Length: 385
Image: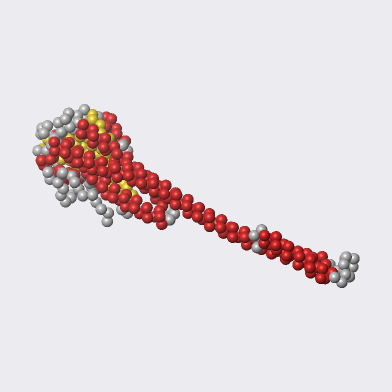
């Protein structure tokens, strides 16, 4: 099992109970009621994306409205807060939420389009925050990214999830177990969500570190598929870097507004703690990217060395083969000379010179010997024999 980073949040944690913000079957699609008017059916479709809705006063839940309109109506005064979670709402659902909470159209458009980079923008007295959550999948050894949009107003927090992660039910449980912190309002919820997202990066960092360690072993073991794995892991690290690096700018922007918006001192400490964790993650991810680039270079060098060694072995084999061919060719030439002489004198024509010469046979033998000896000396001198 991979090591998990211990939680360092100032928020208390307790064992997870029922997943408040997880998706239940009844929220998977809008139910159809044949007897209702189209307007009523549309209203039910709008509310079908609400996975959890609660109204808090002094840090304690005072109502659990089932619709956005009820949530607004349940706010007794400015000291109360509504916290509503939406899961994969369609355009009509988001426009309905925008109308209820008076959200800026540009922020709503970003939430509808999704696939946004992490960012923090302020529209009047409402903060719009985009976060990219991540989780490591052990089965496939890959990183799964999710997207979360947060609208944080004076009396409400509206979260819009476009993926399974992050699971905000644990955040809600933690906040409800600490009323003193929850009564600080929507900013406390925002910082708790930031902490949960950043804490969720720890298993991803551990998983990526484990993958890199495995790749290092594969590089020096000569695995031919390691280049592909380095490339795929580099893409995940780059995507993870895009999800984490903008967080530092977002957290600095929040810190810069402490005095202007009179942020509670406890929340300031909380934000600094989240910033420390985010900085650590960003530094680790930057290190991963540089390490993978170095590993790719090392692997290319090792592959080149292996290819050079193979070429050297092939060259040596070719050289040895050429030497054998030289020897065979030399002996073939030596043996060809007496064969040629013997062939000429073996034609048995009557008019061949020296046919009836008594010294012809010794002369032919001597000629064969001298020719073979001369060729042998020549080939030996050239190193062919």
